[in-house]
Length: 295
Image 1 (cartoon, rainbow, N blue to C red):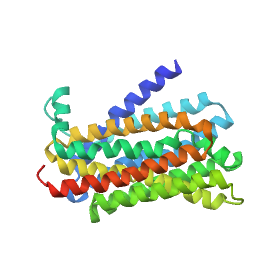
Image 2: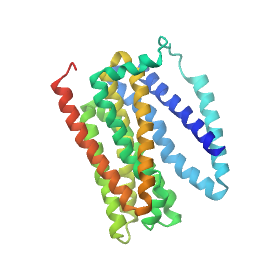
Image 3: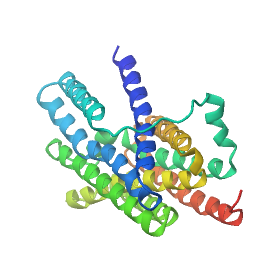
Image 4: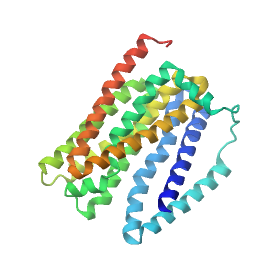
């Protein structure tokens, strides 16, 4: 029953996220589109910054059932807010599944989308096992909530700066910096797992914040690239990007599940390697897109 309801909750999240992104893109003008998308993704990052440590605290104080009940109550509040507060946005024409997938025939979309899968797999290879990794890094239980909050706070800041930076300098420089930071932060965390240096709590928290920032700075810039590549099919490409986000999460979690038994440094190193690969893929595909601007 727990697994079935977990899948149902994930399906609801997957249906909600692309709609929220499409509405934000429709309400905002082209000059502020990335910031509008960052506001939507900011909801996810704020949930990471506050929800994960709060859920951990509630679960530790009461039970995991109480934590899930809290999620249900907050979901009902969110549904009520959307119903009464969201402005009316006209829907588009009915689109079949084949028509939705037709966007994949665009060479530019097909080149950009794999980066979403690769980048999310990189950050989620260790993320699903964060508590186990922090335990292996000798983080005491009393500091676990603080470390989770540091990750979430970094995620919120990274998402916000990504939206503003993308509107200012474009998505490619932001994504290049994002994957460089992710490679460095996960690599340093992997080194902590090997060297076990003493008294690293503040530095460890900073690395957790950098990991969170780089993980959640991807989406605004990447969605901006996709919408720019197919502006007349913005809702379709945003939905495809959301599917790729969840696919990357699944792949990363599966990889991490195979590696976590070999020590904390192994999934962290794998995540860093995937982030470096994402950096290379970004540069390679951007060069191809610039060489074929109409392709």
